[in-house]
Image (tube, rainbow, N blue to C red):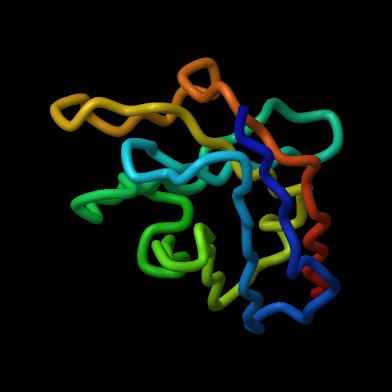
Amino acid sequence: QVQLVESGGGLVQAGGSLRLSCAASGRTLNSYAMAWFRQAPGKDREFVAAIKWSGGSSLYPNSVKGRFTISRDNAKNTVYLQMNSLKPEDTAVYYCAGSYWTVTKALSSAPDEYDYWGQGTQVTVSS
């Protein structure tokens, strides 16, 4: 089993930055893909970013590309989401997710592809 704990959320003004962290425990993530999703009230869960633990390839939707960066620290078993140029529409609960991933499998934006989820951290962007 993998346990994921997010941190780093908060309140920030539009144009500001936040860095979210997701600390994993239970096993090392050398063969895992990790992702961030978000969910605003009344909306479906939305894909934000994904990264392979080995190799470093990443995936972003157009809505955050160029503003958000996903990264990992293998030594700390932690994945990060650096969010810059934040907009009010980025307001949501942000969730970290992970799953075992084969080397040849392409990264996915589908929530169903990820087996482990954190409890979420609130990000609020004021205008």
